[in-house]
Amino acid sequence: MADTAHAAPDGAPRRDFLKLVTGAFAAVGVGAIAWPFIASLQPAKDTLALASTDVDLAPIAEGQAVTVMWRGKPVFVRSRTSKEIQEARAVPMSALPDPATDQSRVQKDQWLVLIGICTHLGCVPTGQKPTDTRGDYGGWFCPCHGSHYDTSGRIRKGPAPKNLQVPGYAFTSDTKIRIG
Image 1 (cartoon, rainbow, N blue to C red):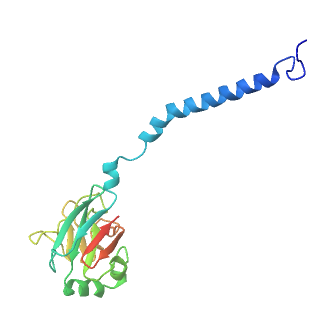
Image 2: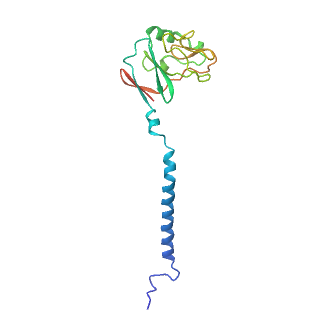
Image 3: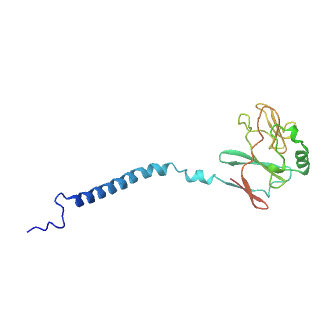
């Protein structure tokens, strides 16, 4: 005599188990196929390495400026003289098209860190080299369309609508900064 107490005549428990196993295999298969595509959307390791840039400030003399690259953009790092700092702080806010105090644009008075891209059409202003034209206000000058920036990177004259942007940066020591 067959044992009919443990098996339903229509095989329902076995069918439910097979559906569960088949669904689980399908989900694992879809995940295995989709994972390489999902992983390819992550930034490459060389791109992640550019997420921050360390700059040694020790070799930069007072009044000198250097340009470093960060995320494919030029970043101007200038060791300002006391005269440049005084000039930047003496400007009344009413004279600025995009008002910002000098103190709000620097972490330490001597060091000015700016993204070196003109806010008008994305040109790179001159003023980093001692022989460059620095414009009417002693900062930077964009020769493409005539924007003049002061010693704090604020727009003073010309078509640029905004000040030169200050990137996120932090002092990691007295003579080093990390941009980004």
